[in-house]
Length: 624
Image 1: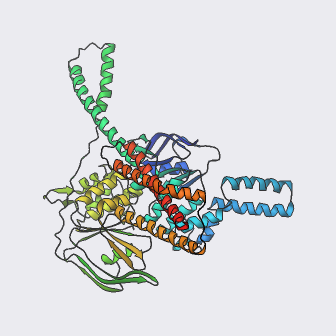
Image 2: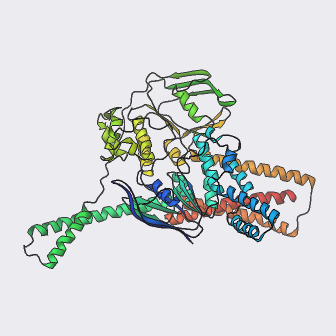
Image 3: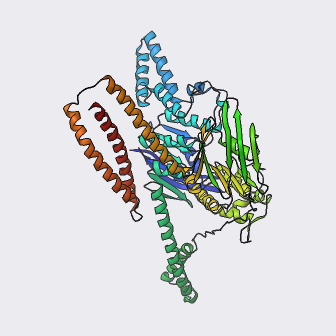
């Protein structure tokens, strides 16, 4: 069922063209991601579809009575309202509908006219369409999942992350047919992101999203739309499939350009020696030469820089934290924390929002003082600290001038110099964009420039607090390349699990109430251990309940139960064999992508079946 059709959409800001003649559609159940570089109009496109902005040309067509909910990057609420007042305000469509229904029922019981009866019937139909009968239960369930429990708290007192969670919870409560999500994972901690992944995977809803979170793309999306150089490319598959097809397309494009260059050389020789007589055939050949020339000269030039920065020498002492304590009233952040940093160390920091990750970074860099303890910083340490606060510069300045105010160039380990302009170009600021005023940059472009102002200072101890927010996938790849070559110490706070996996192998996990765990592993390895521990805990918990019941009541197995019990061991053995075979197939480097996706999905099903059947076997065994 087709829910949305976008036809020949165009948008520009003066001379800057964002996109032209964009056309695509969404069917029920599609989970589509829009991928494009910063500044190409991704957010503008979502706003146009949501009816918040207006296109310069084209139209957006929805199926009759299609309900649409939009999540913006920047959340705007009335800060004077409490959370409870906001939930029950006109902001929430279902809450308003429930109030209208309750009022109509009350009026009908008092008046009892045909008019009030008809209104109740209409609103009853709407309540059914919106699945509003269990609104109270669903609202409590979803809000608790997003750790929203104090409904009397003022919205203005919430942090940026808490507002984002509240906005997302309200959006999911609207029960819309289409969700438009602009960077939904920004400001969410990893636990929230994983919950949202599962929610979107399980719901029969349609999603159009803009996100840079590659694991999120891989696990949620079944269709990716790529916007590049004004053209739309459709990829029916997840992020892995998109990468494969894009590489294939670029390779084919390079081959076509190579052929066109050879043909252009041949045609150019013919034109130079061609007779003066202009026959129809000759004119056609000359006209065709222009097309060949355009194709031959259309090869994109990609200048790759090996940015291996020459940092200040790091001495023997780097950073020592001894018995550090920090709290805010009843909120305990650090409780006697000790750690000594080593050369070249790469540490990832994990933890839910509000457990003190940013406070910890501020204490390290001297922006905040600990309540007690000692911090010893090496004399040679030069911090580079990328914060979530954002870029603080004159908005009328040109982009190039912002970097030149710090330094005209940075020096590489081989003694070569890279100018501010070259560094900007490496991070996708074209020569034209370098002379653009800061105020004309998109949110992602400003974040990118902010990051470069930190790197331009040539730090030997780099601290990055959520650097991936609002960055496009190409910028993330460039940043990863830079950080993989970086020789100094690195502390990384990020909800981007792919980014964390690639750059860190040592984690400090903030559990709250001053507890910090130390894990020497990648994020994926840490998460796998967590999942295994959760499974074991559930099994133990389940066995405890069954043992209690078994002591209270002992009964003979029924014939059907006995038959099931006898067959479960064989079924479990068969499933274990299938699991081993599937794991071997998935790890085969020569397997086709479509087969890998198919086998991965079946592997997930088999693992779930094994868990279910093991628990059922234990139940029957206890009864036995």
